[in-house]
Length: 280
Image 1 (cartoon, rainbow, N blue to C red):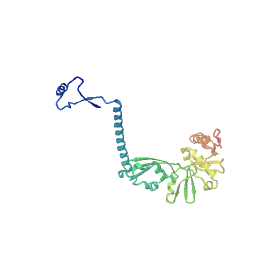
Image 2 (spheres, one colour):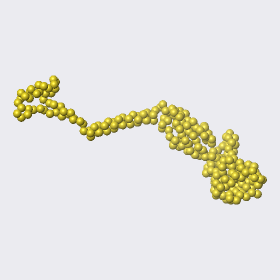
Image 3 (cartoon, rainbow, N blue to C red):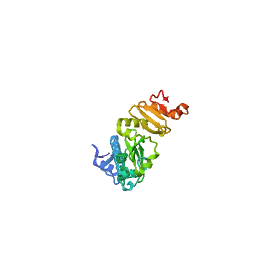
Image 4 (cartoon, one colour):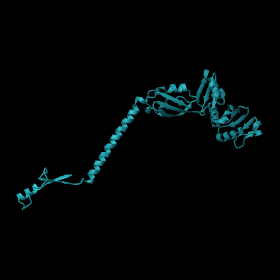
């Protein structure tokens, strides 16, 4: 802040003395004013710095928002290819058909929810994991419900999940593809006549370790408390109800991996009471 004071003659000082003093002033300097500099108050300096920082922040934010907007709508990132992985029951052709509407969409606009919505009618799909492959690709990893049982209905083979839902139907030229799955068969009568019994059977099958399920040939039940499993080697496993499923699964797995003569020669393995299995 600059303040100026006008010098006037002091009392008793004549005009000539004042003029003589002014004559000694530097050439070009105002001979009637004397500038005095004062330091700027700290509050003013602080406000100026805050305004400068705020302005810098606003400029940076505007640049960032502009960059994000450019990428979000940029045709350079328009989706041109989709790679689907880990799908088994969901065929590549079907996946590409369902995901086709995403083509041409800028990659930053494609979300995992978008992909899940397009695949939601495929009951085999449990969830998806999506990753961008810059500049214009999308990777979709499919996590499927494992099939736990199959039912032959006429010329079709229906695969069921542990929840008792049909997750894939094989028919016509697709029938040979169903042979590659280790899914025990349930009779169509058991599947169609009593829904609660059928759901109990698939619930039991879903509790089995994959290795044990691989050794099964079929599963039957006349009621919810009388589930029986037929092994591929001809032995019958009496499971009972779906209570204490984890314990029964552990006992069955131990029996199947055992070399004990009692287990190998038995026709029936009764594990309906898992703490006291019986062979006969």
